[in-house]
Length: 535
Ligand code: 1PR
Image 1 (spheres, protein in one colour):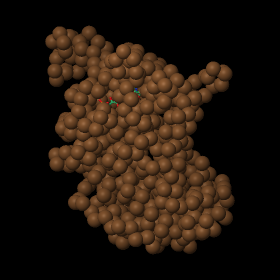
Image 2 (cartoon, rainbow, N blue to C red):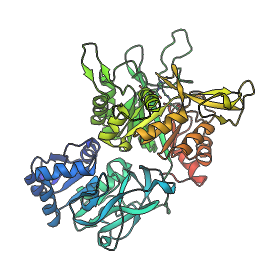
Image 3 (cartoon, protein in one colour):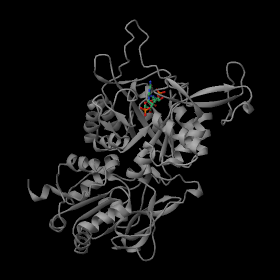
């Protein structure tokens, strides 16, 4: 292939850059991987998607001599695109487990977002940019939203002002992108920002391209509320992987055959939801608790195929725990998660194993550092670890009878009970545990979860709306983002949950699968109600 169609990629092996690879290939380019510092110097254009922790990345770069090659490449004004940590590393230093010295090309220090002012950290989701000047690759982005996921950020100052091409507001007004000549770096993820992100990448890869200019659509400034499509996936009795959907977690048809409800093929549906405007797609391998997911190669294939064409974040859950297979081979939960990440997941979600981890932590009062939750968030960062909670409402007459957090419910129980607690379950709702959703949420936040996916067994598949009492309770109890799930039946249920609770996102399955309400209608409704969404 001609030199014009080749992109050099600096992947120092710290994590998942599959999405960046997929996006570059989708745009019709071939990838050459950097093996030696000389490959950097020889590149005609270089993409640097930083992943992992700042200090670890700097260590690899300096050990391999890539740091000097990068500095010299950038000094010569060669075409460069840094992404996320690939922007942060250009600064003088970072406070992430530091101070740690960076490449020092751009004046300034990278610091952590302050969660004390009510903004949830990590910053996860879609924001519009304020473009400050001739922005080159950002040209036509206007007020469209792009996807961010990070806990650290660089701030504008007099010293770095001339580098800044856009900023973003999230409690702080931080640097969203920098540009000088042919050198670009972005804090957000163009490879996960849908069409807008692909056109940014496309303009970097092919500056002569005449992509259609998309005008801005009004001024957006807050973090958009996300609308997530969820695919519960399992093998049916014939052995095919299907998207299924339960009523209160029961996924079988109430017929004589009692077959697993089949609502379509996972890869097709995910692709459809991406086109329809889903801000994120989640796959839950709902029998992962009993069938080992690495034995479940179809699920990994689903992720690989989906991530080739879907350029918004992908989450996958189910079966993330330590496991010994029938031949006695031991797999750690970290290996299971790593395989999911390598196959195209941006985040993994842990259900049952997080319940055991929280129970253990609350009993012992100290962290062991050994739970799957802690290990995976240590290696991949807490923004990559979601905890999925499957609680069931338990009504009580007298809240003083319990050690657990109870709340006054907005509609009383079957025997007039005015209080309830939310009991966590494991194994797909089959077993109740002696811990509440409130206690669990607080514990997993401390153990390193970056986000909570909050289901509710009572509401699942009922189409009567989200459990606002539960979602308010949990979203007020933690400072990480909370995804409201279970019960959506109409666009009004989405605006209700965003008005009445501090949820950052709302997830639905049934209404999308049954084509009752398209994702676009949900978004239009939210917009009409004055709630910011990505259009
Ligand atoms: O415990 O780590 O192996 O993870 C298992 C994962 O599978 C958990 O995240 C758990 O929530 C999920 N899961 C297990 N069994 C079921 C089931 O339905 N039988 N599904 C299940 C969870 C709930 C949501 C659903 C929303 C929205 N389903 O995923 O999409 O309730 O539905 P709706 O909009 O139709 O109301 P582990």
